Length: 276
Ligand code: CO8
Image 1 (tube, rainbow, N blue to C red):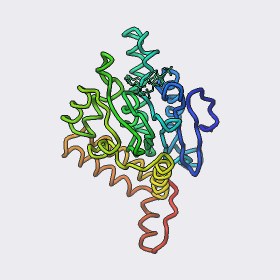
Image 2 (image 1 turned 180 degrees about the vertical axis):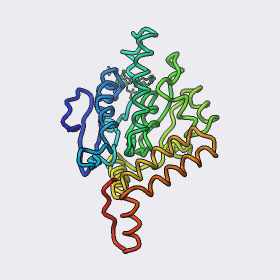
Image 3 (image 1 turned 90 degrees about the vertical axis):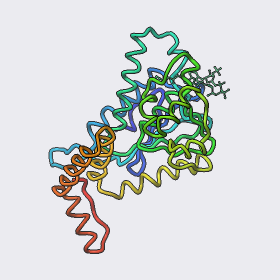
């Protein structure tokens, strides 16, 4: 149903339980206009509330086990917010635009399945920021990253001041944001912004798909609980994080998947998970 959504700026494809969302405005290096943000919201809003939800028979919807977010073409992932549109905005319009965009990044973080950014080229400004709201980033060797907003008289407004320091530490985040300089994939890997670098776009998409195929073999309900717990723990002191983890861990003992996964281990067979 998601793949059938008609979008002007997104290509949607579902294959082997993996949804690929390709931001496609190649003429402006896939810059994020308000239309792109609105269309991403139309995809991820419903997906967030539907995935994992049980139907009348109690069967949860795990028809999508992972999402790939990428950009069309080889040159760019996303070259930031659309500067031509943004420059005409009033402060009130900019506030509404950023509120919608920021909420979208929270949706990506709270989607009950992993979202992986496949960064094929430029990931600048809002492009770097949307990638950082994914669970992890794989990049092609030709990718580059940066927060160039200060060169436009702006600051990162799509989560960059918050998430970049979580990934690379506060000093590196400050230096990148204050200078606006671009870094290549190798430096992004060294800093911890990127998890893996692949030689080209084809290898990149294969590697991301492989990672999500591995996820799809695990218990969906356990992966969702793990994603939820890791995110919540980021904002908590250690003791409270441990408490939260314990209660999420204990809750797994009430799932069919825990009974199945542990039985399969003892019986030396592959588990047949139902996601319940
Ligand atoms: N917005 C609008 N148009 C763009 C953008 C952009 N962000 N990036 C590129 N384009 C357009 C260019 O204007 C050009 O159009 P045209 O052919 O009509 O002249 C076309 O894309 C191709 O770009 P270039 O000719 O510039 O290609 P180059 O290879 O020479 O350069 C660069 C590529 C280095 C990526 C260069 O285009 C560039 O610097 N782009 C802008 C990068 C940038 O500053 N991004 C940050 C924007 S601000 C931001 O993201 C704030 C986020 C916070 C709010 C988010 C809410 C969603």
